[in-house]
Image 1 (cartoon, rainbow, N blue to C red):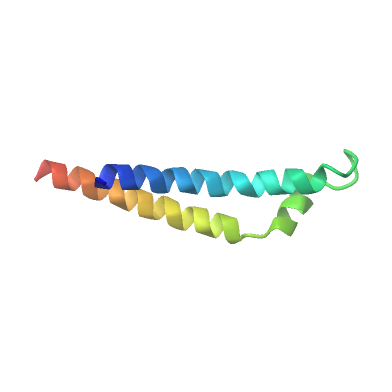
Image 2: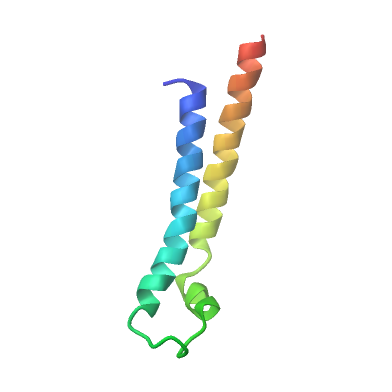
Length: 74
């Protein structure tokens, strides 16, 4: 597997993890009426772990993409 493919997959993983946070909050709030709880409160109950994991995956993906570009220029 090339570095570009690996970097792209890590960026995709970062996107999925970031979207999972919002989907989890939406699923948890689906049982509630519209004005019962604000969406920000539902997001706070999901936690910040998914944000941290998505940032790590994004940074790793960007590093792989940069390394692939640098290797191509040499």
